Amino acid sequence: MTHARPVAFYAPLKSPNHPLPSGDRTMARLLMKALDRAGYRPQLASELRTLDKTGDPQQQNLIRQQSLEEASRLIAHYRALPEQSRPCLWFTYHVYYKAPDWIGPRVAEALGILYAVAEGSRAAKRAHGPWALGHEGAEAALDKADAIFVMTAHDRGALEKAQPAHQMLVDLPPFLDMQDWPAPSAPLPHGIEPRLLTVAMMRSGDKFASYGILAAALERLQHLPWSLDIVGDGEAREEIAQLFSRLADRVRYHGQIENRADLRVLYESADLFIWPAVNEAYGMVLLEAQAMGCPVLAGAYGGVASVVKHGDTGVLTQPGDIAAFADALGVLLQDRDRLRSLGANALRFVRQERDLDHAALRLRKTLEPITAGMGA
Image (cartoon, rainbow, N blue to C red; front, side, top):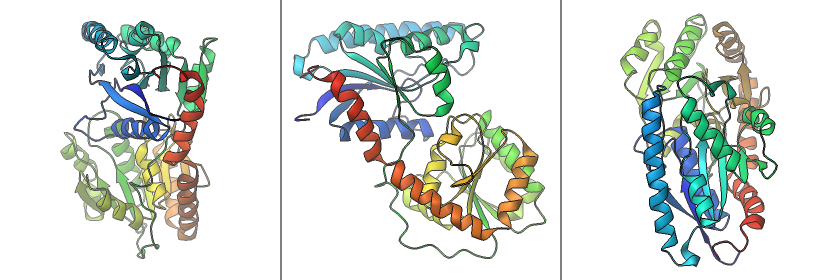
């Protein structure tokens, strides 16, 4: 590719510039990096957030109207640019019924450019009920997409079932930029007491449910030696600390850590990353831990199996099953050799298969043929 062509990038769930850290923000930023490495010039088209957490039809209608106004503004803006400065592609990250993309399909159609989505999820059961309008918008966007980059096997089934004839489905599993996570130079010494680690925001809903399962499982294992480091903060911190009140002498709270170097030390020094992962799409922290040689124990929700290889880089248990999680953890706590083996496999897996270069190559091979001549 001789020069970088502009790509309009949009993340309706959470902008890459959002002030609060999350897996969605991380992946949005990584996709922009991967597009850049693939030979494109991603430009953030809009920061309009379409998320409706509560299922409020009035709010969804307002978001739709705001989105249509934003689409009209962007169409006028792009049409006023010289042809070589217009985007050759609109690329949206994460489309589902709670955060539809009302903007991208309209702009793409008006400009005569292609429309691509990464991490699109279909949910037929949401066609009726409080998120009906959001579902309508998400389905319309996914129907319009010329290419959908499928990030987990969990999403693929529904996408294949409703796949239009013109549409490509391309696997693009979650990935990391290894420059952000330099490989451990040497294994850190681990103590006699196994060190457990979890990294997660402290908020109500699914995160709170995961913390609840974690605390309940650990209470069953007080007869075994272990300590737990928790990285995270949020409005539910006090309630979550209460969940661990009977384990207080074994739990260390680190709050929110923005500095990757500090987080790397915790990943490297941990024997096992543990997270029940209630309704996680996949979990970027699970990849980060493995990149530093830390194996994972997680609940097998959603796309978690697309980032943790069960029995090879970690262990997955039945979703929401406290007893199964505790039993699996108890076995691993008593088998340090297996933990070391899983950790070595995890490090190789992420660094050899889930790096930025692999993602950029997949994007380039898919997009280059279909964007040739557009925006040139």
